[in-house]
Length: 538
Image (cartoon, rainbow, N blue to C red):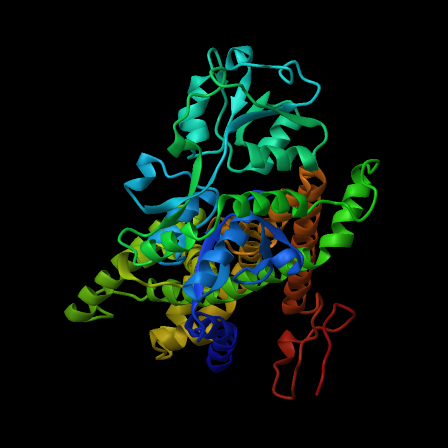
């Protein structure tokens, strides 16, 4: 049995280890971006319009991608996009996950303290996106937005610098990304959000019910040139800074403007069929028809992480749970063994409390980015996700196993000792078989929880189901149909898993009625006659 479990774990882990250890012979330039901020960057189905491949699958297009390709060509490298959330871009750069950031990032003084920046590769002006039929659509100055509910993206100059410049503004909570802000404006949660002009043009092109307000000089935002420019982010002291600046100097301004116009024209939009009259169900059908491959990939990654993480976590929890039940009294162990057991139990208790007491999202950030920054350990995103799910599950399972062991009648342990069985033999032959059956419902519950909790791995760029849904929403700006469809898929996965686990539990329970097997040596006193679900067999 132990050999089969070990073989299963190796089978599950081997492909991920190979992915983590494999390297590419050709030189690449790993470019970090959200791939969800059109027209600067977006995710698309294929390599059309010069899209670059995304690490882990998919394609990215946009102005940032085109500029990255020109820079990489001058450096003699190939562009590989690393899809990363906005908050994770700088940690990814510092930990060595990416070589550069090209994500419409402004080189603010605060950011310059953490990373270096190249010369600007685009300059723009700042506008406010509003509903086309709102009273703010005809605004001509910032003063017209007094009393308006305005937001901007978190950790940007839009929110930290420009938003406070609006007199009398109602400063709303910063949003995680632009699709979220577009939804907030369309649903009336806010009156507008701050954006660069290209991003606003892209949003309006995909959402005719939106408009953006630009301001004449002296009536808009007080900005410095550095606050409206966009540059490439690099690690402090990077050798790539000078070569990249030389490459950027070779790209004329008219070429840059042409690339931006092409990006606005080429951004993905539902243009392959009439979508103006699509209702809710129509949009759900549109998403299924055009993005089923993305959703299927997300389901595959989600189930791989949930199943593998649960199996490894259960094995880890069994080991921890059994070790923590080893008797350490004077009759069972000598002084050295008692000290060692106490030290091991303290370490295991710390492990359990730390990973049960901290959010999985934080653990993912620490494992994926922190290990790279502190120790230079750069894990593949899928391996990092599996590691986080496994150790998190193991911490919970350790307590579940301990409770399962304690639920077995102590008299069975005493009986095993009476016939000379050692602790490990008692556990293996008497206690664990019963404990495992007792904890099976809780184990199945952990599996179901893991299916849902893999969504938090989105923060490190794992292409699970929620991440794919967020990408689709970033293209279509149809949040309600997209996320309701994603929720339905999660429900199908968890419901099916629950039913299969319950079927497995019933099979372990065996039949409800049993027949007593007797022999010629069975005492007559325990043999009942009549129809009482007992019978005699010889």
